[in-house]
Image (cartoon, rainbow, N blue to C red; front, side, top):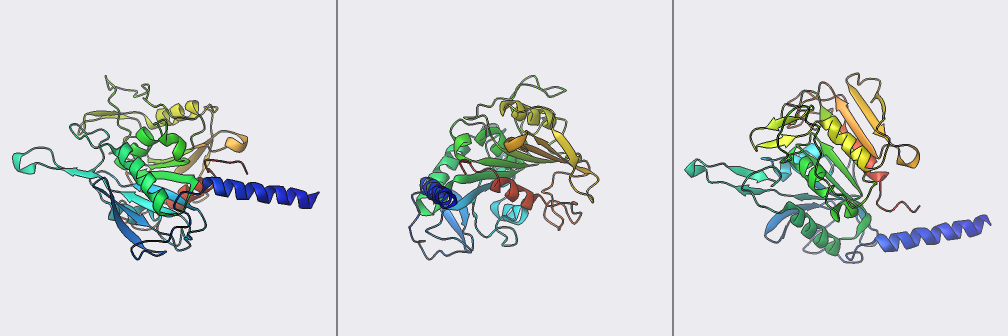
Length: 330
């Protein structure tokens, strides 16, 4: 009987693996690419970058992370911030870095944008969701990707794109298995924009079990934790606790989460997990009262200017992704 059960489980595992393999499985890496490399690519005249993990194999579907840089920043800075390509944290996940568009007319004293996403910006018509679709289609054709383990992460405006557009779009919310947001600028065009910033947030995901982890600081002056009228783009930012509660309700979870101190040596950092049983932590919120508009890291990075946090966001995000595949048959 035990032998039979093992064979059944093995067959199911093989079936799930076959069903989740992208069209690129079995295809040799092209143009001299190799595991451990970082490469520039273009789709529909827009640029993105691909990091191939050290343990990549054309016969084993790899998880995929799509990581979005902050507005006015660039891919190189995001690579250094998120550390998803660092072998210390990741040796098996392929990471893609889309690049925001630039729009400038500075000579005429107009607004200048460099490497921004369209979210929240006036007269900036880039279609970043279609850009994302095109990347996903191309990457799955070129590389061996586990379609059940495609994830999205971002910082600042890039995190806002992840949380306001990708997670809220009917089809993309069913392609990405889970989402991670660090200091998100969750721009909306809701009017009037006024306290307590607990307005209905436009969002229509294609499922009711969307895993989301969000990191925020009490000293974030760019993405105010309590909500704000963001004067630069003229958009409204919801209260972050309200935005979290909106996702908790959308996922049909109890709004009473379980809040604990993150670790013994992080007295200013709490983690709140929503959901019970196999849905525990489906929505997870990490709040540090002393943190600014930073990617939390114990090491110096371009955000913290030498004043590190007491915890690391990167391994927490990767662990969150690992336990939230799209298909949890096994």
